Length: 375
Image 1 (cartoon, rainbow, N blue to C red):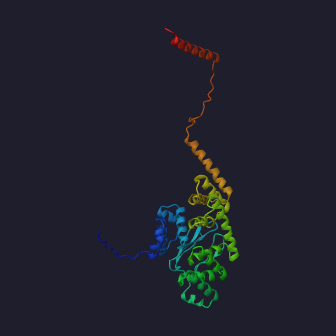
Image 2 (image 1 turned 180 degrees about the horizontal axis):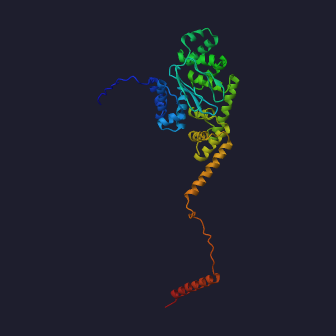
Image 3 (image 1 turned 60 degrees about the vertical axis):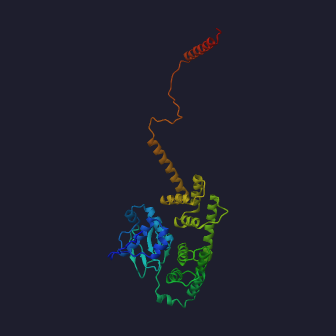
């Protein structure tokens, strides 16, 4: 094949995309999610006064729930952070650079449905978590500020521990993560050490993930090792219950299964009884341990703002009523089921019927005799 000549042209209006994103992250995502991320990068250069979920959905001809899925996908990969309002709707986006935290998208508007934008702020505001807890916004520490912590015993202890666990010298972004947990979240050194140990032992060997776990604890108002262990035990109970329903008691959960259950308990915020009901229905309809099928059920319930078993029963009744209406609307009035019997009333002369039956039998009998008469 002939060699292609690539003409870069002459333009100044462009959006910078990290090579790390192209090489490492883009292959993992579908095209719709990539569109959403590139749009956010694009808007960092121009700003946007009316950024909202619906605006993104309209621009790419998507459903709003698909936009939300895309944002949560990038959030799970730590390329952006999301905050929710009291109703559980996204009202704040923090778009993280792969190297530094230079991008910030946040709610500067009094309208909850609008997401305003800003870039390179030196003093980002704190945003509320879904529980109402105010989560301090992440600060980008300068080299001078980092140097000022060099004599801090707690900072030195955490830095040494992280480097020992990870087996490398920490970069600026990783040091920022430690300072954020220590200086902004005000978590105890021992508690941060516990978070590091549990995350790394479970295979999550990155400070960005450790920081995310620390923020999750902060949102739940968990600030002690005892509180974290109690929270872990609570999650273990739901794991056992789900695996019992799915018939998976003999195997440990894999990463994908853990991801689903974490989504159900934390992202969607469902109680145990609702999650277990979805698993029961999954087995009833598929007869197999299908986490994607259960996830679809729970996502639909979240779309319908289900918060209790009574809400589920209401949806069931509504579904039944709608099906009955559709059947009634599509069935002609004079149509009858295949096995339906006619109950039209008729008058019969029973004596006459018996006489006709007797004559018929006599004729058949005489015919038989005539055929067998010897010739």
